[in-house]
Each structure stands twice: as structure tokens, then as C-alpha cells.
Amino acid sequence: MNPLRTTARLLTGSTYAVLGADAVRAPGGRVGQAAPTLAALRKVVPMPADDEFVVRANAAVQAAAGALLAVEKAPRLSALALAASLVPTTAAGHAFWTIEDAGGRKLQRVQFHKNMAMIGGLLFAALDGQPRPADRRVDRRRPTDQTTARRIGRRRRYFSSALPTGTKRRAALPWR
Image 1 (spheres, one colour):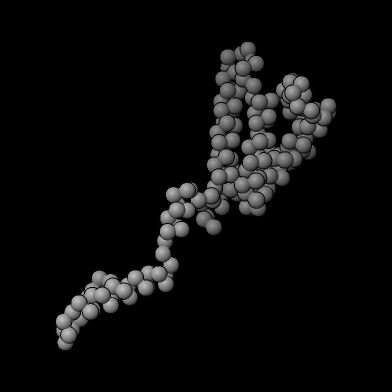
Image 2: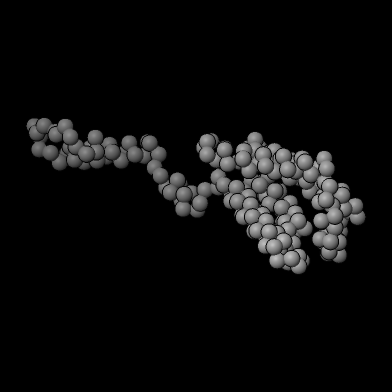
């Protein structure tokens, strides 16, 4: 595995594992902050009525998926789970459009866009390792060693038969 890729997954996953575990142990003000968003979601999606349970469940998903991403077990699935869990977290925790104070709104907007960038990075991580269509096409068309040896052998026979008898071959032919 690529050491840079391993480091990136470790740094990204460990952040979610630590922060998710912290939110599972003590959700604190996150429950009150998520309450309006959860109330709006309950009108559309059936969810448990206990806000603290929902916040802890979301944090548990982040902790588990972050740990899996950090140790490179099911990295694509864990990156998708983190991205999915970060959407409601971002909407509930950084709803800058509801804040009246200009300074507070700017701070929350920065945090909102930071989380959006993190979701984008997680989506890249979910796509990581899948060959592009062009790469697959080139790999399929690459000849095997036996095919290459047969082609080289044919060239040698063709060009050596074209030499007049008794003529020495040159040592530096490009196909040797």
C-alpha cells in the first residue's frame, strides 16, 4: 500500500474516531443544538423521539467508521458512512442561515464549508483505488510475456531469413 495513502486514511479516520467517541460519552450541548434540525427531519423521516439517542447513534457511526478508516478495514464503506453521518451533523451544528449576529454567522459559515470540504474528501476516499475506465482498457490490452516473446521471435526469424546466407548477424539489433 502507498505510505501517503495510509497516512491520509490514518489522519482522517482517527479524527472521526476520537471526536465520535467523545460525543458518544458526553453529547452535552450537541443535543440541544441538533433539536431543531431533528424536529424538522422527523416530519419527513421516521426517527426515534429521543434526541440524545440520535446524537449518540450518529457519533457512534462516526467513531466506528473513523476507526475502520484509520486501520484501512473497509475504507470505501467507512468513508461513505462518515460522509453520510456528516451531512446531518453539518446541517444541525453549523446552520449559519439561522444566526442573526454577523460575526457568529460568519464563523458558522466557515465551519459549514469546512465540513462540506471534509465530505468531499471522504467521497474521494470512497472512490480511491477504483481504476479509471482508461486504465482498465490499457491493462486489458497489454500483451502477456508469452505474447511479446512470440512477436519478438517472429521478427528475428523474418529478419534473419532476409539476410543472405553466410552473412553474420549484427549484434546490436533493436529487437534483441
